[in-house]
Image (cartoon, rainbow, N blue to C red; front, side):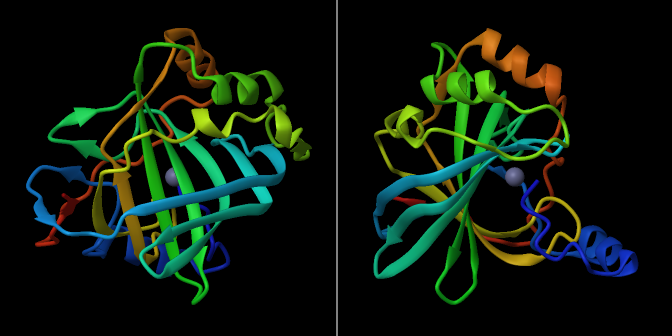
Length: 218
Ligand SMILES: [Zn+2]
């Protein structure tokens, strides 16, 4: 779920947008249009991190997250959270886990960068987070920034899919820019089991495209 930014919206409005929206997330990426999309420049700092367990997901928030730069646009990293299964699919493939990197642009717009995981080697960043995980609905816990492995958080290759979508939890607000990295990271089966023990099946089902086009960087 993306952060419930508009959590104060009336229940009726939430239901309407989630059930009737035509640009909802997540999706199954099947057909794509190759485009000369701008490259992704990652300038994350992971500054002043705090770890939260809201009972639905594990969320790492930053007071000074650094930026993702796309062409001439700058997006500030606000938080990272995790879903299992991964939510978005690629040609029918369901990933056991995905991380959503939630950013906000200078104009207030939302951008979610998705990092998929497949089963393999242990991931050092996840290892740190799972070992530090607070109890459900307890207070956020500060994390030592120098203990977070930023290199373990983002794939080396930055090719991506791009589409226009929504928050994946009520109120399902649309106008969110979604970027899905094509290269996946790995986590161990034990890490996945630990995460799922705390947060089982916390991803929304894929939603219809309704004519939306998925762009693919060349
Ligand atoms: Zn999410």
